[in-house]
Each structure stands twice: as C-alpha cells, then as structure tokens.
Amino acid sequence: MVGAVESTPLVVASDSTAPEEVDAALSPPAEELAPPPAVIQFSGPVIRVDGLVLEGVTEIAEGTGSGYTVVQRLESGGRLTLTVVPRSASGDTLQPGQVRVLDLPDGGATGAAVFGTSHVSASGPITADRLQALLRRLIEAPVVP
Image (cartoon, rainbow, N blue to C red; front, side, top):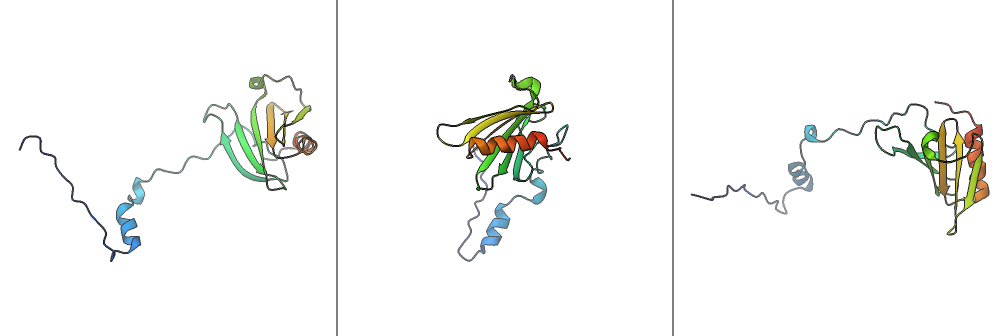
C-alpha cells in the first residue's frame, strides 16, 4: 500500500488500573533522565552577607566568569538580591570600602559596594539605612570559604 502510515497501538488505562501503574508505564526509565546540573564553581568564595540565610546562587552567564547572583532571606522574610561582577566589568567608580545606597520610589532600597576585586550591587524590600549596614558588614567581614 503506497502512502500507508504505520500506527502504534494506543494504550488506555481503565479505572481498574492503579495510578502508580499508569505513572510507571508513562515515565521514562531512570537511565534516560538528564543528569542533574553540575555544581557551580567560582574562582573564589561566594560573596554573601553573613548572618542571612542563603537561598540560592546562579551564574549570570554559565562558564564565562562574568559574575553571579546571590539570593538571601532577610530577617523580615523578604529577599535580598546581590549581583556580583568583576570590578573591571562594572563601569562604576566606587573604590574598595565605599558603599552607595538609594531609596527606591516604590519602597525598598538598592545599593552598591566594592569588595576586593568584585563589584556588588544589592536590592530588596529593606530600608536604605539597613541595606547600608548590611553592605558595610559585607565589605568589613572576612570571607571564609
């Protein structure tokens, strides 16, 4: 027969089929699942504010060394986001030890600091005074790998 299409039998689960049997029939074998992503490795320790819960770290552009983003939980429950890039790539004029913080019109604050060879920008639902204190703690506290 010209133009024939080979068909695959359709399996339909009846009400008597247990849900776990259907799940097992539809799930691919374990060896076909993609491996978990590799652990992110940086050239130095991850810069973060000591004393806040670390929620996650992601690279900005995987494998490029262009920086990373850190999300930490504030005491209030809100999230503080730090973006860490090489100082040479930031284009900012801050010097090591300097902190700049601004109030945001819709609430919260944003700020920046230089830590060693890294430029750190931060933002979150926090007062400018509190963010300044956290950034000062960041640049004054030793980093422990």
